[in-house]
Length: 327
Image (cartoon, rainbow, N blue to C red; front, side, top):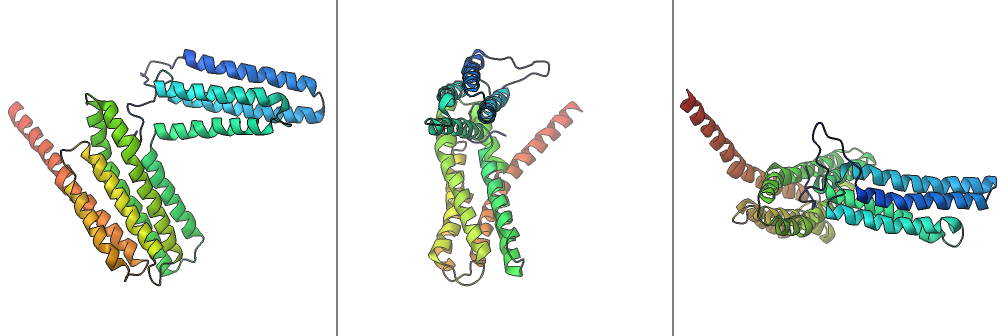
């Protein structure tokens, strides 16, 4: 499921009986690695000592991982796509800096070597995330953070309750995004006459709000996990309500791309969150996030009842009519 930015898909398309061929741009990138290997040989030649050998091995491992990781992602991403080609060209530039720094990598050019290596590794991984499942990755990260924080706490009843509320919120967010919106948007973009505009609006800009909502909500969950009792403060209130509100706004705008109007369920949900702002000041840190999660669940259930269930009924009726016609 490809959900954040990479539309149309940047992945290679393979048939069952077809193997991926090595493209010319991949061979072009390999020239940088050939240069790096040459540099390694020259460096070892100038430092034929045990210490020099150890240094060369370390440099060789850096070059190796820079190449093998790039080769791995080009097994999955299609180098004939312009975005993937731009990535490989950027990696080539960083690779040239890395290779040119090899002769003095443990002297005056240590920083350029390190920066080039980090840029290659980090930039490539970030691109891979952009090309795949970014929303589900963000939600998964929030679940992991919740679990890690819960593991360090005393498992008293209030902490357990806060943990359950935080997990329920992550599930509600997953349902809001993946149950209807993501697949519907994918179908619409695939059949659109102007998919570029929809991709730019939906996956480049609007998704920032969705991911921001996940991040802010994770902050609120962490605050509540550590302090489930007492009184709510302004920071916790802003994180809990603000995270849910950002997520709903982002989802509403995203779903608006594939619908003639803003989803009423999300609009009502935002109204309920606004009402929770003054009411939340009198709640405990545990009750407020439970109320916010309840709002998300209401919105998800409303959307399911208004969109998914009628579609299933219509499909079933159509199948029944077709069966009667055949019989």
